[in-house]
Length: 600
Image 1 (cartoon, rainbow, N blue to C red):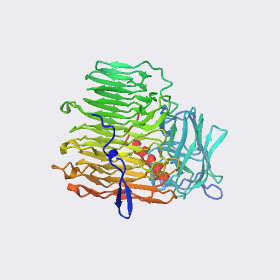
Image 2 (cartoon, one colour):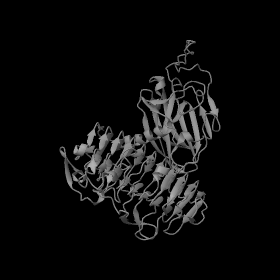
Image 3 (cartoon, helix red, strand yellow):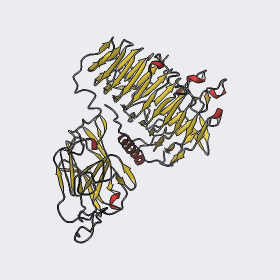
Image 4 (cartoon, helix red, strand yellow):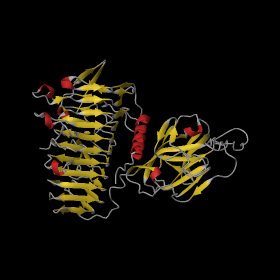
């Protein structure tokens, strides 16, 4: 039976001592003078001095150059600008380099983009004076990037970075940036901009050493304007036979847009789906969803939440990959009934989720102030299932547009001793209550394993949670609340205790916790045992009403119980909003360096 809320959500809030504080654990190239001649260089291994000979080595390009840039559509959400083709470009010395530093005057002769020792997999290496123009078509709202002079010039150089709306309106000016300066993080409002132009000038003192980097340049593009409204939809579809299906389906009622009534393998690909109910739903299905975009619409039924992206009841097999879901109540898998020996399992890979939303409709296009407990990914009674993998998903929630509990919750669910759940390399940002400015108690978080009560140790646990990045999820980052043989390691878990606009989150709580919620460690046999919380990087900041900050990185009341171990976790101290932004840059670089494509 579907739980209406997690077990943690039913625990009464109570103060718990933590050191000297109380933790409330809630629900779950420039030189002076004239430019000298090029110095002599050894023929065997030429040394690059980046002092220029006064000759014209500039470069101009009018379309995507032959360095691999391809035109891609701007997806809703965040887009790496180095994936996009410029409409015009020029550079003061040699060609602009994609995903590398400027180097010298030949294509591909730069190195890794490096600012103050930090490397970046994506971006542009340019030279003053340079300009790049990109056609945005008014689709995007914000440009973010790290800017500075590349380390390859050894602290020399001085430039000015500028962002323009076409040729008429300057949106940003960095002032003079020198090679000895720290890298800057910029965030520029580009709402309504048709043609975005990125400019670097020589700061008025010549071009020597002026190797400038636009590192991890990201465009946040409209989601609200793209709920599939430009797609021509047919009505809902009922699938009664296995096969591959592509189309654009919608349901304007509070019912499924795609209803599957067969246990034969069904593939849904290259599709657009929107609905006031579930997007895709069925019982006893073997389902693959890939390269599909799904949008939940307000149900317009009083007291109802948005539909699920995928509602898989008594699931036989489920694979969801390279898809995009917005405003839904997530992917739900209940009561696995397939045949693992035949390859049946669950895999959720390389998807993008925006604004998991449990807010209840008021029936007339708004919300009534109440909510259902929902998750981006929820397992319910998925027991003893091998070969499960949940990896490389990007989940981002915004305050006022979402209401989620844990972003990932594994309720009365387990892998096997020889094949635990693999939950890895996901990026999760944001978990907010209905009123994040005033809520002092809120249950939402990043990843929770071991939720629910079982009597058999094989029915809860056997999960490996590693290499994930959790940012700003209010109540907690990652947590073990029960189960056996759960291991959480090598994750990065940080929060500034603030919303993206800088306002404080009164309900901010703790980064990591290990807590035997239901006393399962006292059962015979114990169903809380041999868990590990190890070698995670954590910084969890709480901001008081007077603006003072404190840190609450960990709460481990049940480490040591039945072989459970907590060790090697690194507390990085006070976290800022800038550090949260840098974490997203880190994620984008990680995705790129691993050649992973997230989303459709």
